[in-house]
Length: 304
Image (tube, rainbow, N blue to C red):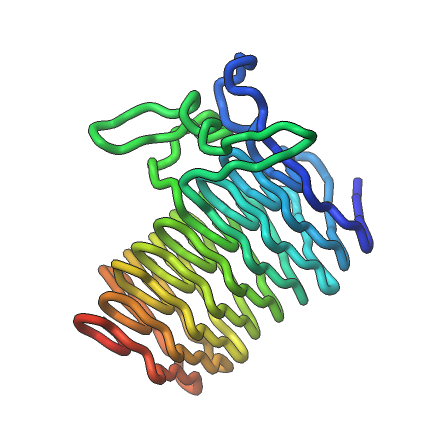
């Protein structure tokens, strides 16, 4: 089957199941403030949002705007805007796990992952952070949250992927996508790309995104990122950590032959433009990578 939404406004919605009134053992009741997509292996289905807006939605845990689980294709096309959404765990704009997503001519802007947030909906007030605690456990001093994908515990790192979070066996293709003004309280203000994922981006702009600890623009953690065409990461900020533009931690970033990648005016405590820790950035023959006017408070203004 194929579902295509054209010109729809999906705005001012809330995903927040009452944690005291449910016996569900996962967090899916609190995911996908605007849109939640779940698919299974062997199901022939495609979902497309074309020239849609997904704005001002909220979710207790995953995907303030959109939450995607499962391998069937999901498409964002023709001027779709995902903006000003909020959640309290991962993926302020878009959360993807075990998914295959393509975004073309799409803007992801002004989304947030926050530690605590109160939203009024339907005449009631909801504290979004209350959704996290019934589905979590402690490991030492680290909180782990039970992931709704196959019931597995996510590595307990709430606060990631302000614009977009990509996790676990997922593939993402971005063409002429803008990721602007997103923020998180830990990693990946614009995008957080995690273990066992691959992202291919052409003509990408990541600008004015903010993270407290790592990767103001993008974090690549044990994942692959392929860059082609005109790619600009500019004016992104990390408050107390490193990698203002990009943080690559045990990941691989490829700048392909036709890639022209610029890191400009990014700021961090260390590694103003780029930080690489046990990872690789490969600039192929014919490609270019420029670091311009980036700033670090301590060391590695351009890269570290």
